[in-house]
Length: 186
Image (cartoon, rainbow, N blue to C red; front, side, top):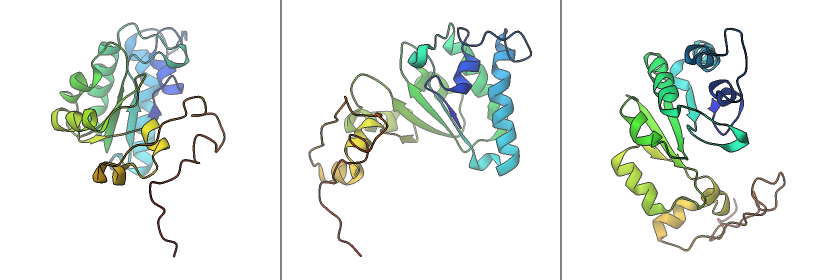
């Protein structure tokens, strides 16, 4: 489930976007309700072992402003822990050190990502793997390098990202980056 980047789940969690006065708004418990009920419903339908949740605490995208990301996400992760979800995918951005904090509260698989001004380097991803996470995800860097694992393994140069085109809605700058070496057909 995508509960990050200012999308619907995060809008329910954040105080500035959740102005509801019903059972889904107001207190932390009520603001968490939507996320928890959706995750529980999906897990009940397909099995918790097939469900993961992606979150981005303290991420200001789409004008999200979370007053207490630490308290919100600690409570969310703790509430969901008994379900035994397949994974938690944490995108760290902002001042809250979400990966280190939530790692201690997440007994299962943790996927890490940094959403900073520059794409995460291979070395930074490897450090996170050594210290905090089970997996590391690369977003923009993978878009520009569709063969990223092969490039990392070969210590090959990385293609530069065309920031002005990324996530622009078309193939240019999203699906038109070539692989370092073309794979044989057939």
